[in-house]
Length: 221
Image 1: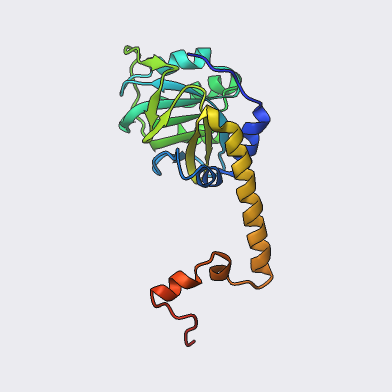
Image 2: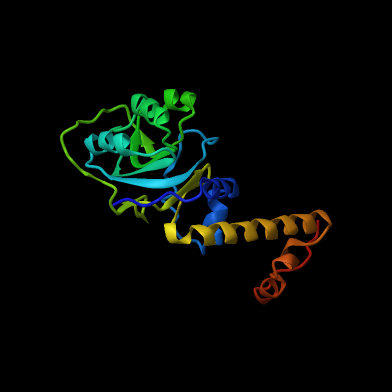
């Protein structure tokens, strides 16, 4: 199952908007479990998902995936949330980097974390574990999977940063860019109003609700 790449600048725009903004703009859908985080908070990733269904304690399917990945792909691996082995390390990171792969998101663990961080290859994982894996079980590549509780289809767009990872269905790419841009614009306007002295509760339309629950507008200091 293969899907065409979209304009890479769209991925870059979503990356710059940030995972949380994209998630909110699309109606709070597509977020992976909060335990899947970058090895380093500075890591960011955006690109087309190449999906991998991986058997715990085995990385044969991952080895195959890196051989067929195209530049700009993000490997998204369902390792069944198994964290007591690291099917990905610095050697795979180096090869992936040389192949132009944009990053890795894995519902499982990785190892050689310090080396990976120093390489600057974006890796998002549920954990870190020194235990290695085998190469016997076939798994599957480029198929629908679940990663961190989110459904990921081949070709979906993956956005990850320090806040976490969000999945954007490929069919929603244009809408995600448009809605995220609108959200950023509105938040920029909100910040300007706050700098001008406006009250946040007023800007968010919360006064009636606060009054309904009996909150006082002022308090003694």
